[in-house]
Image 1 (cartoon, each protein chain N blue to C red):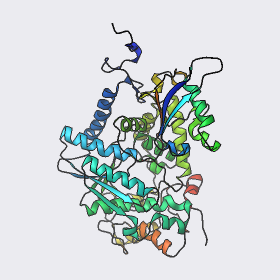
Image 2 (image 1 turned 45 degrees about the vertical axis):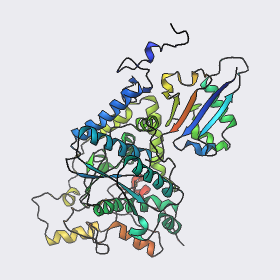
Image 3 (image 1 turned 30 degrees about the vertical axis):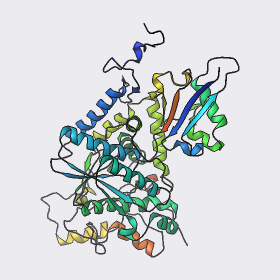
Image 4 (image 1 turned 180 degrees about the horizontal axis):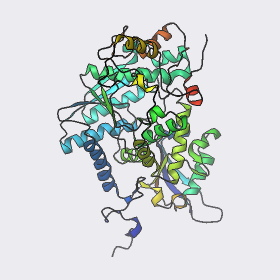
Length: 385
Length: 103
């Protein structure tokens, strides 16, 4: 008998392998497991998500939207690992957007560049400056900090698409995790934004305004486990908040979620489950214009109607834009930049026009939500110079 | 006996600790000679290491570590070690990682 050998208490043993010390308490099911079993279940769950949802096909080229943050860093690492382990046969490329935020994005891009070396994956960086001739720093100094997420969101969506198009890739995967997903469901619920509520948990989306599909392999992965995984595997990630203020409402929703999670950890997956099973009853009058069933032939008159009604911008509070309000008409391109757009002029060009004219006043009309708090949050503060 | 330990502030949490991620420190004895527990360390951090009082709420909520911060005791989730009642030992590594920063 070795005197100073401390035998772990039975309660501390891994509930999976019963041989090593439990180090992780899984938020999903409160299971206590060891590091090795944690790697195993965490990776296998993501593999199952990928396979069950048929996210990839052999030979597909996939761009990982890489910010250098924890989620996308772990995503790049895991995708490479699973691709080799299970022979998905996909080709992985890192795609980063340089918004031009000094002291934030330049540092995080340095992390992505290290990841590129560590994982031996090709990297493409697309900058706002080269695409729009504006950096976020310049935009903020012109349009104010309150609007920063709106501009950044619209520009990033298009920048990711353009970056992917440049690489001739039509599938972008992002590191959105279960917490993000539940947070979005909660936010839409709190705002009464039913139109978005129904779609907010979809794992793979393809906006009609864009030929590029998006998917979220971490849809069911807890933030806590992603951070733990990165910590144990000593992955190199960047963790500084963006210099420009995050959206207040999302922050509050996040806080609420973290507090709920502390009491009942499964609530994150439960909220996603609720979101997935939520089906809205159809709106009768408004829906007629939005729905473009295959049978319905769009005639010129309808087209005009679409134009009038849908030329207005709709910018979501999470920064993304709705590109498809009236049914996307194939081959429609922005008159200014030639980018695919269901409107005459794409959202980015409208925002750019505003910037060029040195005004930050943007009307957010054509909102899917009714008047009230939901609409109010989308109405940006007017600024004058 | 005071305990000497290592403390890590990760995931962006270092901003409230003068951007220092790794700290070696000694937690002094309790006045009543009771064992030094993690709660004592938390109090020590709040009282001695957070320079701006406004930053305390980044770290603490309702008298404990704020939800969203992952606390590990020698790489083990503190929930498996008795949370703030854990008795500190010399050489322990306690890490606090914020999970809230952008992905």
